[in-house]
Amino acid sequence: MKKYLIAAFLIISIAGFAQSTGKETHVGISFGVGKSFIYEAPVFDGPAYTGLGSFDLGLEIHRQLRRTIFFETGVNWHHSKLKVSYANLPGNSTGPGNGQCNMLSIPSNVRFEIGDYFFINGGGLINIDITPNRIISSQTGLGMDIGLGVKLSVLHHFHVYINPYLNYYGLVLFNNEDIPQKLLDSGITIAIMR
Image (cartoon, rainbow, N blue to C red; front, side):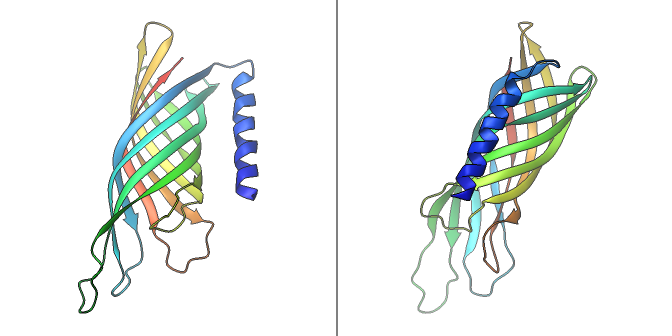
């Protein structure tokens, strides 16, 4: 219940933040594709996890703090396809299987613009794992991300951000597993902001 209250509070805060006046604020949508990776400590005879493709869809809010410094937040839905393989031991008839990981992520990033077109961004992530029937550890917790990219102005009122990124969702997981699997994701996001 706590995680749902925290998520509701953060979403309300983001909505209020978007309505504030003063510095320049941009709101838009983003979508991205990438490849997932699973990090885990080696376990003898344990299953092996492979990340396949991933997809992101989000609502983004960018707020200008200084001339070249922006705060970035929003809400993103992340979907990863995963494959699990088991050790080929005598008596083990379990074959490979597929699964998924679905999360809501709330980024808290800072973007530094370099000139008119380039930027570096990064910061923290609050993740809420919403996967039914998960095959890896719950990814609810804190993560971090980093990226760099290009900003293009389109039709005077719109900006397009092309942003290669690396997300580490499992920096701090809120589960009690001794050897959790941690999800990493790299890819490219395109955001259209007004």
